[in-house]
Every structure is written in C-alpha cells, then in structure tokens.
Length: 476
Image 1 (cartoon, rainbow, N blue to C red):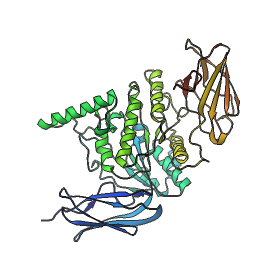
Image 2: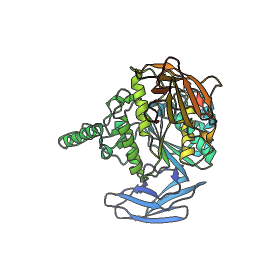
Image 3: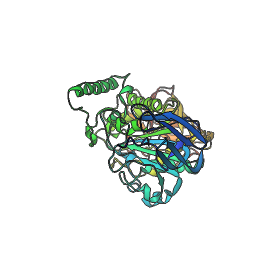
Image 4: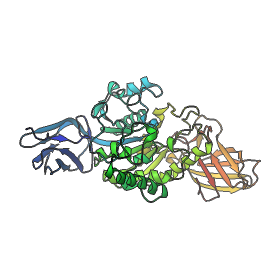
C-alpha cells in the first residue's frame, strides 16, 4: 500500500518568491517519522515528519536573487521540487471588491496588460472562500492556487477579470524602482466586511471584537453536537467573523512577508464606530501570524461614493485615518479618484502607484519618493481666518495639481456652519479667509462627498481630506 506523498505546503510552488532578509519557514507534509532534507541556494536543512504528517524547516536569511533556483525536499524514497524560485519581497494584497477588481475590468486594461510582461513579478491568486476553522490548505475551487510568472496572459486569468489591478500596478512599480523580484498574494473577497478577515485569537479589546469572538465561540460550542454553523459560505453577505481568515490567510502562515495592503471598508460604511479597532486588530493579526512585529500594513482610503448618508462615508474615513496613524502603517489618499455613481471606480493604476509610493517612502526609506501629499501639521485661528502649516515632500512649496485655485477648503465657527474659504498659498502654509465666518474654530479640506481636492506639493500627490477643530492640530 502506498504511503503518504512528500509534498510542500500550498504556499510553496514553482515560480514563487521567498522573502529576502529574514528566516524563511518552509512547510510540507509527508510520511510520519521520515527524515526530510530541504535544499535551496546552498543550504540543506533536515527535519523529522511529525506523527500528524507535517514537517517544517527554516532557511537562514537569503539575499535577493532574480536567478530562478530549485527548492527541493527529499526523503530516502521520495522527492518534491519547486522550480524557478526567486528571492525578493512578498506582499499580501487583501480586502474586498476594489482590491479584487481585475486588470481587464479597470481603466485602460490594454495599458495594464502591456505592463504585465514582468518576469520578476510573481502572482498568487487565492480563491474566495470561507471556513469555520483555520485551514492548512487553500480552497480547491478552480484548481489548486499556484504561483505564476506575471505575463499578459497570466494577469488576465482567474479572479474578477484577472489579477487585482491595484496589486499589479503596485508590484510593477516596486520592481521598476527596486530591481528585485516581487511576489504578490491576492486574498480579496468582494463585499466582505472586515470581521471575516480577523481571526478568533485577535478578536478582543473592543466591545465589537468581543462580540465577534463570542459569536465564534458559540458556533464552536454548538458544533460539538452537530454541523458547525459557520460552514463554508460563498456569498459575501453571509460571511461570519473569522471565516475568510480561516480559509484564505491561515494556509499562508507562517510565510514571511515584506508587507501587506488592505483595500476594504465599503461594506462597513454605516458601522464605522468599531472599524478602527477592527482594522488595528487585523494589522496586529497579520504581524503576529507572519512572525514580524513591525510588518508594514498600508490601506487605501475609500473613494468618494454616494452611500445612504454622506456622514457614513466620512465616519469611515475618520476610522481609517485613526487606525493607520501607527509607525508601521499608512493610508493612501483616493479622494480625487472616485465615481459618485460607481462604488468600483476604475482608476486603479493611480491607487496602486500611490500605495507603492507609500511603501517606497516608508518601508524602503526612499526620501526622494513622496509617501503622501501635504500632511497637515498645525492650525492656528484668528479673526475671520486660519493658517494651516503642512509637512511637504522635500520641504517643497504648496501648489495645486491643475494650477488653479485651491479647492475644497471651508471654515466654520462655533455654530458648525461651514462656508467656503479663499485660500492663499505661501511656502508650506495655506492662509484661509472667509468673510462669512468672523470667528472660525474649525477648518476642513475635502471633508465632504463630491469635493474635488487639488492641493499638492512637488510630489504631486493630493493632500488627504481632514476636519480639524481648535488650534492644536488635533481632530480628524
């Protein structure tokens, strides 16, 4: 009778990218009790297969390499191999439909597909799925997920119109600027709320998180006497807390990453109160699962869209800003890239490139690349006026994207009634004046659905929307 077959874990296939610069755990399965020898790039490491048929070895940190090499595992009687394995940087690209939207669905697909001839860019598309408990394997739908070399053919295959347009533009920019291999893992589930992507062990510290954890534990308890209530769901509006993580993220761990992108929140508009806590919990979970406590996680701001209430979107914006203020996170502005009549705006190339700028500046230390547009540092108020001081790219002077007058600025007094402000730009300061607001106490910039912000600096990225009160720079 044939025994168990020697295999690598699902995340390890030919054409993959291994993360450079950190120890790399490599996992697989095989005959219990047998000794497995894993070789790669001159390293050979042995491990014993456990009684449950699992094995793990850890490669010493590797230098980046664009030379494809074999990753081999062997026992006394069997051999498994991943061919054409590169070493570079691996990024997880997760979220809902605006991350999922593929290259053939986005604006100018022909340009994107022409850009997709990228031998150093490798793609892994994880199919949408959910599970009641953490899984060791990816969902089997549409064939086993496998790494592929990025080409116009592979970029348009699978998913929702192909591989994520945002992710592909992000990865192509990194390859061009860094000159090292980049691996992109797409794990997006259109329509999903954030809670399904947060594992049970990260659901604590906030009433909403505690409630999610209680729901999961109740389902686990009920499953002892029958089918688990969180059986796999394929419809976005029936996903339960933790279930997308169980099926789409858990099988990746503990694969090291260079960072993660998160483009989600549309399905949480209207329930923004706990969103910041949930996003922070997700970031913490990704850092713990990857074994990297300082893992960068960068989010894309929701683009403007006419939800049931404009205030619901603004509240979600505020939650996104709160959650991404940490030292290893950030938010890419998309306030000028929306379509008020389409929740899936098509200008995904700009979103991907802005996320790449954020990563290049903060993660890779590229001071010459702008991480964001002008960042508000301080506000002072006077009679009928306000002075805003910004941090700008390379200390450059403020200007506008189109050369016109600055748009989207307004002042309000104690009554909270905003009136448009006339803006004069001087260096890194913006001087606002409104004859209709004699004693301003609040200022906002593009903090309204439908505004078309144009403030920028030499980096040519737009300033993020904000609402500030008082003169100390605090507020949203």
